[in-house]
Length: 607
Image (tube, rainbow, N blue to C red; front, top):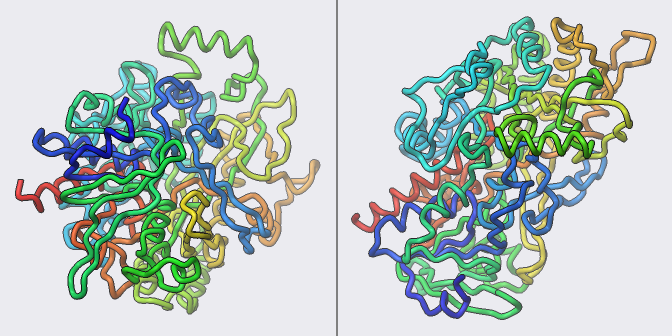
């Protein structure tokens, strides 16, 4: 294991700050050249054997564990009843890719093209994202006939990789209501989409997950990119190293130069140097925190905390996140769900099955998805009213960036090929928010309703010059009322789904939100649904945009080469550079950004 002293005595070409999803992918690619020395600083530890990380059926159970999760929370959010919202981020080798819910999905072609439209040439689906998404993955079709023959699963070799480090496969266990959920969506006019990786994600689909089917364990940045390359003498990872500041050298009229970093390990301060570049990969919350601690950010924020401004940039602004509502319903008692694992005897049986045959609930994950466009959520009159509401929102023209982003979202609103709400069928009682108590002896499923293109914008900033103080996270959830209308429309859609065949005959009973009354089929009013949304909404943990890749005049922090404006050799490579939310989970896109970044950096070096 590398010591801090040994790390600091090494002459690095590149220093990467963060050993998570993007940082390890980038480190692996840059260190392919044996003449280049790459150092990675990670505040967390390298935890090899933690079932909550590696076992698919235990997905999500690592959230909140201080060993592997920063477990942040937002400040009080006025539009959601002044609640503080849980906002986990991965801590340790692999980062958030090691603790997420395994979803490995792609957005629509137009989402990726929007990144180019916002001022970033060649950052589009055709020229960049498809190529690098394929480079990331080894896409493994199912071999179990029961799953391989599922009519909802497809595979198109033109759109998927076969040689990438990350393994993408399908759940080895389908829950009892999987097919009924999918078939009900079809009966509601949502067509089957057998392969959402082709740039069209609208429809009912079975999505891939980041699991290696050979070992039946999570495939994440640590196992896919770091472990296979950890033997390289030119790839040096130091864990337990909390970056406190980037060392910057400025001179009048010249770009600022990043010379190295300061970090803390075991309560001691150290300094490491970089000859070529310093690269931030600390994520949408901590990348802006480190930039501000180093003197790069909004002058008013830095001055408040006694930090001298080296570069005045809108660091920490443009924060966006996907919100979700767990629509919880009781299912028949004999239904096998992940909650069944709470029974020690059943858990012992499943552990044996998982270890010996790589089957059963512990080999399973999320299986069924629905990506819904506006015309499945609103009638023509409702959609017209929503479009009018969005068009009259003066906040959306408050800056060039917001104006350009809102123009894209307005364009997507009526598009039947562009998803606005995602539904995930979770075979368990999801309880990250202020939900009612699970009733003993009852079995539950949760259908997660996710708003894909939020119009609300927030910020994340330091609260002091102390690098160990968590940042202030203020997404301003539902500050744009259109976001609430979309979520409410998703609730109404799922209530209708519950009453549509074949789901209607599956023996399910609404639990939260409840029926209007036990002996009536009367529905909740629109106002009652909105109030329930404010009470129950939580994050699905997809923060982006806080060091946005956009033109500087539009509020950008990094240019299309991912270099921080005004610097010679400081880049950002993580989800914070994504300027607008994608209509899916960001894991795959973050890997692709790191892959593209490695080629950009190699080209800059003349390799």
